[in-house]
Image 1 (cartoon, rainbow, N blue to C red):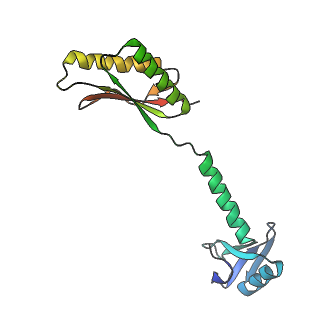
Image 2 (image 1 turned 90 degrees about the vertical axis):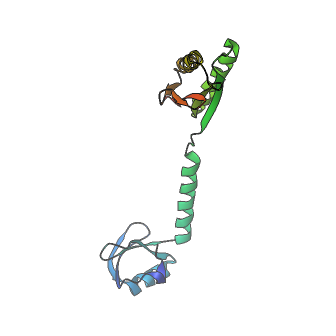
Image 3 (image 1 turned 180 degrees about the horizontal axis):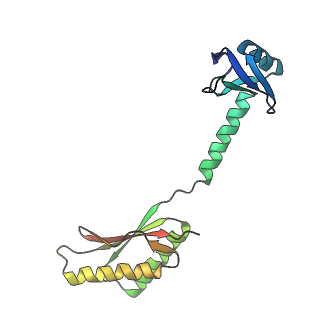
Length: 167
């Protein structure tokens, strides 16, 4: 943004601090009015003809903009990807504990990656059991999360990503 003496236009459309239109004024006169009122002349729309300038307290304006940006950043929800690792052969109590943790993550608003680790050269039956574990996990978490992608087989892992349900 151009301020005061940095403005190079010959004429500007001047708007007061309260939104009052002063009309098209020569730059010198606009700077004089700004100085008389103890405000800064700030170019709002440099591409317009003539450029639009507004009288305002620039340091206060800059502070307000920084505060709004900080507030927007604070209200922004950062979605994390949490991971829960399982095995193809898992005890029911261990499975239920992992499901409870997964539900907590999804309720918090995080995405959840469920991974089933398979042994080297896993037989087809273990791969099938791993798929069943993943589908059971997804159905147990169905109230708070939906599968984002189908089950993927990547190397020694079977995995699936669950996303929290929209409220």
